[in-house]
Image (cartoon, rainbow, N blue to C red; front, side, top):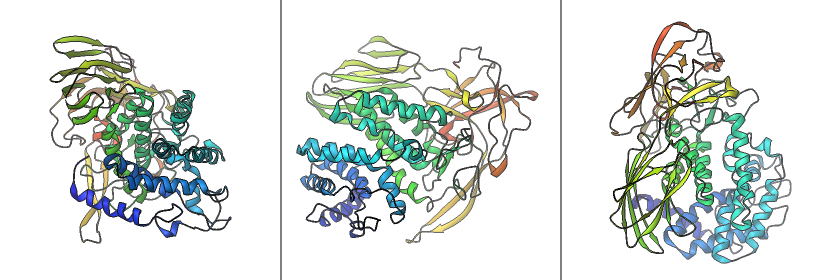
Amino acid sequence: MTGDEKLTAICRKYFDAFFASKKPDGYFGPDCLYAIESENGPVPDVWPHFVAAEILSDLYDATKDERVLDLLHGFFTFCADLPEDKLIPPRDKHLRWQGVIQNDRCCDAVPVIHKVFRLTGDEKLIDLCRRLETINEREPQDRIEAHVVNFAERFRYPAQRYPVTRDPEDFERSRRRYESHMEKWGQMPGGLWAADENTREGKTDPRQATETCAMSEAVKSFTYLASLSGESVWSDRSERIMFNSYPASHTPDYTGLHYLTADNQPTLDALDHDYDNKGMMTRYSAFEYRCCQHNTGMAWPNYVSSMFAVTADGSLAALSFAPCEVDYRLPSGRVRIVEETDYPFVTDISFRIFSDSPFSFAVRIPSWCEGGSAVLRGERSEIPARPGFMFFDVADGDVLDISFKASVRFDRYPLNNDCVSVGLGPLDFSLRYREKWTAAEIRADRAGREWTDWDVEAEDPVFPALDLSSPVAVKRKDVTGNPFTPDSAPVELSASGYAVPGWGMGEEHTVDPVPPSPPATEGGAIPLRLVPLGCMRVRLSCFPHVGEPNFGGKS
């Protein structure tokens, strides 16, 4: 994606080790995973190879190196030849965490296996997929998917069958699985859900958090489903996490991250909070939270690399938006598109077309879009207020200008005391706290470079009710530098609210649940400044409310 030769050399070192480690039976990788102890005797731990297979699949797409296909085909044949008691046996005391992961996430490799099947025609691989799906269904889904990362990966499993079955019901099962889970646990903005390791009954409030790993895995699932199904809703969900929640999981300079991010989270530190996991979960660190340190690297690349897709009829589609260029060879010839925009902070997008011949270009209409206009070769057409795609016949030299209409809206969450959040287009918003950053610890890595662990707290924590009857003003400024900080936020909302006595920080250094609406208030109206949720590390985005909208804002 970047052409960075240093990164390519690092990758090549590992790829070469993969190739050199291949055994005659098709296994590759560390010898220590070839035979681990279980109640059934030695078994291979194949799940780490499923992760490696995705990387190798990317390598094949980039290089068409036949060694990659040979390695993947050989390994999946190795798996297919394993007897039932050796291919991901039931979890047991010997396997510990390895057994849990193998069982709970055993279908992660199915998309790559399907790809190798398409390239080789080996029917044995389809039988391997069926065996993995049977293993996946050995234990109750609800119990397994209470775990935040398990859910982020597993809800897509039914849809993964579609390339073989061509059964639309496969998509429906994944959709129902996702939506039913989020109806209970995802009553909050930013695409998050209440699973600070695991979901817990009675803990659905936006003070509950989501793991950074789960954000990366959810976006991976969304981008996969968007490209497989052509349904625009998956791209909506992908950008909601990436623009509203994912930036807050890291320091602005990406030198540290934390384990858990919540929509209502006024303090980040090493103390216990009312989370399923205890101990240091929210302090930013370059060393801790090892799973997230590895998993986070795929989030932005997955989002960026899936912004465009080829349609079933050979056209090109813009699934997600950001300033970028795409260069691709369609059946009709070479195409280059230059996308100019400050999205998600504005909702105007310009596509400059360079192509060998005319082609059909599809542009996603987001779910929040209230209409708008498209201008091509001087002709204006209306964009419907309906999610999906709009198609344009474009040619070399064309400029397609898209303007999506968006107004301030209030999103309501009935299961969480009917609290509300504020949105504008693809953005959710948080109260703008003054952030106090404290260097908690400075540590050196093995090369002697120093890295800082950071605590962050709101200097002026207030916990107001939002007045829905008061107009909300929108103020914008140019996008410069990193826009995901409070001071550089390119858009700010001015609203009005009231103090809520008794709502504030509660037990275990965690903000209280949002009070029922309308709450008791005191004093006169107070001005509220809100900035995009992704700009705030300490945040308050869900509020009790008074009044009803009377200025055209949606509720």
